[in-house]
Image (tube, rainbow, N blue to C red; front, side):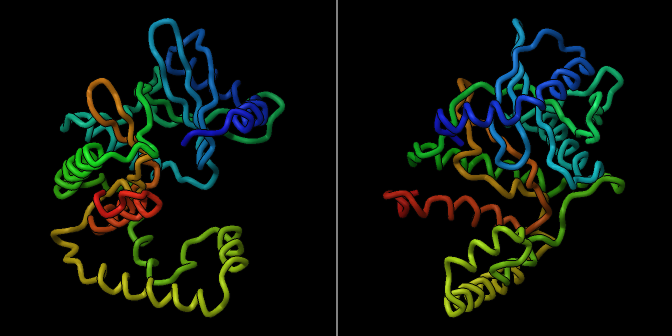
Length: 266
């Protein structure tokens, strides 16, 4: 997501106090003298760390994640890196082999959770929704689903398995502030209409044979999470991955086209 310059500067100032967390996370991976640059805060706080040799992504995770859930995402990414040619984030372990870091700063009460990845250089597709790019993203989604069809997480690791079942209600699984915003925009009759539409969609999705068309999906594969690189299209932001019907992945991607003039082509 592209942040307006003024907002970007304000956010850099807002999150400047997280830079010591980034430096500590980098040091624990043996990475020194890195220059930090704030990237985004859409969910987690993301920084780019650049040394003279290469660049890294530092993710400071939002509160509420269990380690077993984070490790579930990282395990999948590691397995995808090992068994596919997809351009995706590659987790970086600490010098002691840990993928998740718990960082405590002097004079701060919070315990921060950080994860490091290799940086993928490129430009977000974003609004540049050409059919050739969308076709390639479809192929990449197919590769993800082919992998997921036989992939199993170890029993001690987790990812959400029931979130997609809540699609039958408009406000299901929504943060209170988001639900309040929708209630302020829509009338009760409009919310009822949306709930009826959601219920019909959920009924169709629930007919999916979960023994054949179900697995770990990206769950946020829109064009602002797709990157044009010199080697092809990369996929970012696996932190929403969950077990769900593969059609949920399709629905999320297709709904991203709603605002484009060439929606039908896409």
